[in-house]
Image 1 (tube, rainbow, N blue to C red):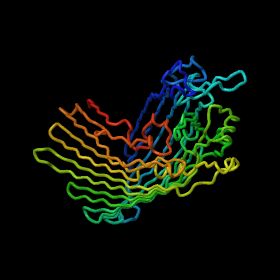
Image 2 (image 1 turned 120 degrees about the vertical axis):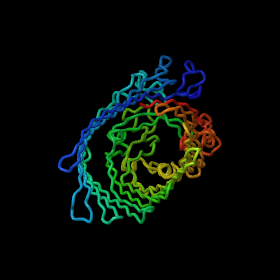
Image 3 (image 1 turned 135 degrees about the horizontal axis):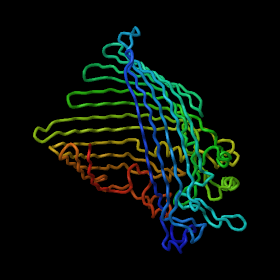
Image 4 (image 1 turned 180 degrees about the vertical axis):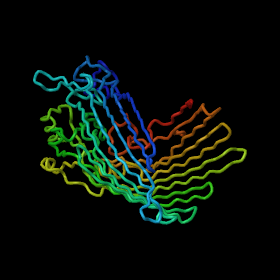
Length: 506
């Protein structure tokens, strides 16, 4: 916020301020299992528990509606996700009358999930009102207001699955795998997915492989429950954007519907070649996803603000929600080559090269819901901008080259990664910004005096590469002089990072 920004208080920040989001993450996990054999069946029973606490805070900020009494640091609340899993499986080799025995695996699984949003301190979300009930200024911690008690939630679900896999050789060189999985969700009903995979060895060096499978992904509890309001800069103009769950009145008034599960079909085909210390793999793939869950457009305008105000969202100018808006198709090729060679008295050298080419296309965009249609032709809940962001917002190609040299107690690793160009899309094609392809190099030198200790010194982004400056690009206002780089850059905007670490293994 600049000094003269209406959301700043010069008594607190004479020169303006840059609010910062702070996080505190705690992870917990526990696993226990038992395995054995009974009547030619090998069995395994396990139980796993995991929990993630994601505390959120804001510093160097203000709640402008509180005036000079506003704190500058806020506890926004926290997000909690926990999962409990029980898995049982058994495997054996059976004679089913095929040319070779069939390796069979059967099993069952139970999963329980819980998702919580815990409210923050009052100042983080409070909006002070005047005598007539109107906000005296923008409320809540700027950049990310805290979770209010109304946003707090505690939701759980469970699902049960049974699965089976059959693996056999139809000939000496031809392997076939068939698998199926049935799942029943407490909130999304039942589904059946399957997979067929095959591999054929032409000779000792060359094998062909391929697979086709179906997939199913239920909306996560976070996608159905999360609610927040944050600051978004669009073409240099800041506004408060609400991300609302689909059962919120404001979201439903703008066309939100209960989320459906995603369904997919995945196909791959490729080969594996090995000869001495050299290996090469190539896999082509195609993934088609129906009812893909995405974020809607940031809906804004006088009609939207009126709906938000009626729903009590007085600090929000825009709103978006998760929706099954599109079908998509992603296809591409993965190529990986490795080569190992001995350098006699100079140690060993391992070389690798990996490249990915991919293309994502939004094959279908669902029509606007009637609620949006009623607001006028200018409203789209998944616009050209969102489609382009989906198709061009990540690199269409990525190259990874690396060399690792082991010599006595030293190990030196040099990596070079090329990120293909991406597009930071705008409301119109002429204002799209193309971010050029860029090579990023990393280097690490490690010393191991024994098997326990490791001392390493390295640099990420060795040559201090940055994206091109966006200041002079069309479609950007002067405000972006503060933020010179596009957030669409597929690599860190922090430049060179030099580090040292000490590792002890026991």
